Image 1 (tube, rainbow, N blue to C red):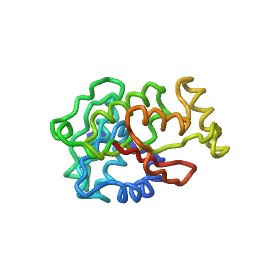
Image 2 (cartoon, helix red, strand yellow; image 1 turned 120 degrees about the vertical axis):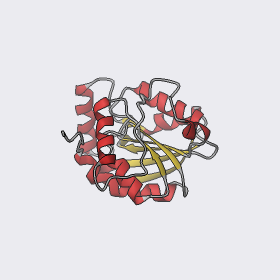
Image 3 (tube, rainbow, N blue to C red; image 1 turned 90 degrees about the vertical axis):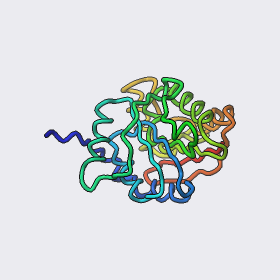
Image 4 (cartoon, helix red, strand yellow; image 1 turned 45 degrees about the vertical axis):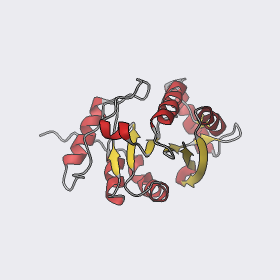
Length: 205
């Protein structure tokens, strides 16, 4: 049988620092929706590192969902990880299972908003703000510009490569994302510097 698992090199590089941050930000037993879960490697790692968390993956790409399912089934796998949702951030309202409709502690997006049009960031923040339970968190990870400037030459080069691929893509301005969140009544509560000139942002409802 063909192995549908995908392997993303960036996942192995950043999974440990992201998991360490999530451990301090997520409450015990949190119900979490990860959007744009990609290969599914992050989800398995986080579920193993935080076994008390209910982690729900999602992705609009059928190949990515097949990969997530294959990772779940592959020994040793993560038996408590549910099958991925077919969720496109910009297709609203989000079709969520009843468990997440009733209570949602966090929405997590890793390396999404710079590899998508700005309208995706808008939909992500607005939909999360309307779905999160009181005190819930929106957690974003990736590169950001600060004060209108890139924080490193490598981020500037990465930004240009993204815009060359699609002019709608690009490294986002932290202040613009923060304002968009504020407009949806989400407050930037914590900002964590991460390896390779990335940031982890915690917005609270």
